[in-house]
Image: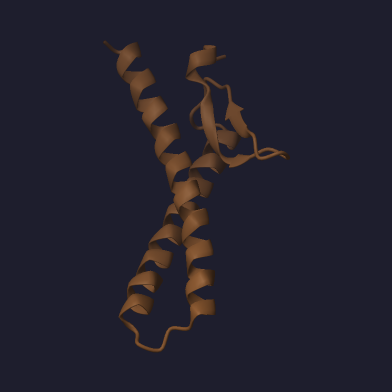
Length: 100
């Protein structure tokens, strides 16, 4: 198993919003692949929301309710994207330390 400082931050949270971690030596295992796929979906959704935001900001007839809904979606996408970036940053730092 991995060392405690090498736990992978997963792209979802637990029941109380607490972070979930994975301890494994198999980066191609089922849970690692599931986490990779969910990260990919989350980043894709963030990209789509960003495109939608650009369109809405240039439209003259965007309602306040539509903007609030967009901001809510962007907030969730930003939270997910930051979790993915944090997780990947930790894994990069761990692999650099391991191979130094």
